[in-house]
Length: 317
Figure (tube, rainbow, N blue to C red):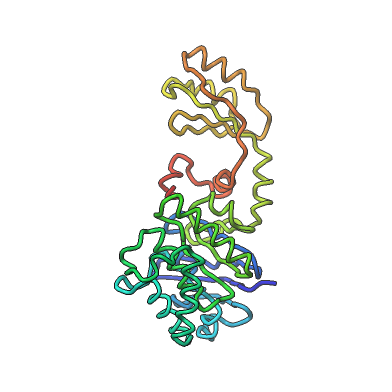
């Protein structure tokens, strides 16, 4: 059953169309990934879904409630974790949580009890009485998530929760997301980390320039990707590559180079020997040659047509 349903959802800023008549639904109890490059419309979409931005056109229903006409009723059943923390630097972790609980009408005593439980659950108990400004980036993200669920919402909106934090903290936050989902929460997750979506989400939507290019289950998308063959070579020197040879021998393939790694994408099985022979002729040593399992990133490239040479810059990885 769809707990979130958006139809022809649109947001304009003057002549700029930030989100252009998008349709999607989120099933109750799932982790739904909303993927896209910076500026694609991810945060704008979350802001419209949560009542933080006025909808220019279309409609959104959340748990059967009109998000435009009854925004206050909607906000009582959702939690929002913005891409940047909205907590107070001078307050302690526990004080921040108790304050957020009060915003939802929870009595202070109950808010403190819930806050203490969340601090323990999020491994922040030792820092509960310290000012928020003294927290590390990872700790701040965890406390911001805790603040977003203090009122026990049925739906949690997470806007790029692991951006800008270290690997260990990001892993802990991903585990927290899985735990929250196991507890029954529906999670709407925006991210530009493809691997994160592949690990966490059951379904994903790709949004580019305000338009959803594709929406499907991660399993189906990866199954489509497995129709492709990806050969990867790790070379001693990519400056001597014979591009004319590559294009003539494999004109249907997509050839990409990242540093000293050469990738060949093809829909047909291809032997390694012709490549290795040619590299040897050109005094280019092959350190590694392997068949790569396609990832969600490969699907993204295929569907959206984004320039692979600028993938790191576009997707912020």
